[in-house]
Length: 436
Image (cartoon, rainbow, N blue to C red; front, side, top):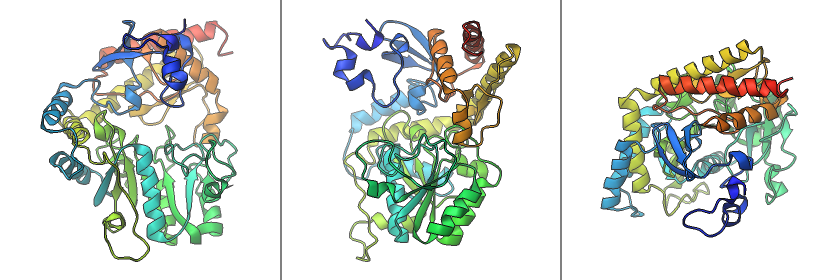
């Protein structure tokens, strides 16, 4: 019986029957490395069958202080005793909003939502309402969540620029696809080409300032800012991953480029489900109820928006991230991991690099420069996935072929153990002929 067929203590049905496909999203591990989590503490997690793993998935990024950080747990416990939800303005929400405004350069104002996809969705709605335009421009390979506008060109390695031909998933009307423009990341020339043709109807350019794990070329983000200023479009940064991780003010602070709007999530909720749209006050105020009837008002609501339990966890997380100089700590640990893996590869004469920011670098088995999704896709993704499988077998929980998220709990000893596991994984693959 595969791991996805494990019978839990509380259920009499296999996992893959109880939860469709045995997964919550679109990432599915092979059965022999499919885990069912029981508990986590710091940089470690344990499965229901008692196995221990060092965790580099970290809940897909939110657990920047590691699992079950005592200060975050206490904040949740204290707020739960005062009330878990009100559907009213509350102290915890005001506390979290003030911290976001303090650190994020564009955050003159914000609106809370429940997840990152909602944050990017509403960012684009704000942009369309504010500009009175319809089209949005995104970049091939970028991930902005599950909504209709976002689900385009996530795996487009053609390197071309133009209108999205079709959505990545069933259930999205072609009329939506016709409003989505796609360009290669780090290619201002392609952006200028589309702007020349469609600029008068372009509401927003949405970009992950570090796209998945691909760093922006010098001047690229500044160029997008200049284009948006010239044509009157909104620049939207998707900072779900980069927010509070690459610096307290996110990538916009790191690179010195302030967007009109940004989407925040993951770390902001300390492991609980909350996100936000932050940005210019004049744009955010389009969501004020009963504002003047000028055709620009937008609807933004949600039962759990500003949930005090989530906000309390977020306040505790951000305060402790600051107190322990967490941004610097995770960058140092990530850099040690990057250097260790790359030295492993040199010892074995394997073409390899860890791309991206050290706080969430990603293994790629090529020595060619990675500047766009087309470059990324040209590397053998099956090898990166196999590397992840071998790492899980060695007690390292990772996203197969994906980013290695680092927390403040990944200390020198833990990173050294992971580097050693990485060497063993690469050597196993080499001896099996996988890297030939």
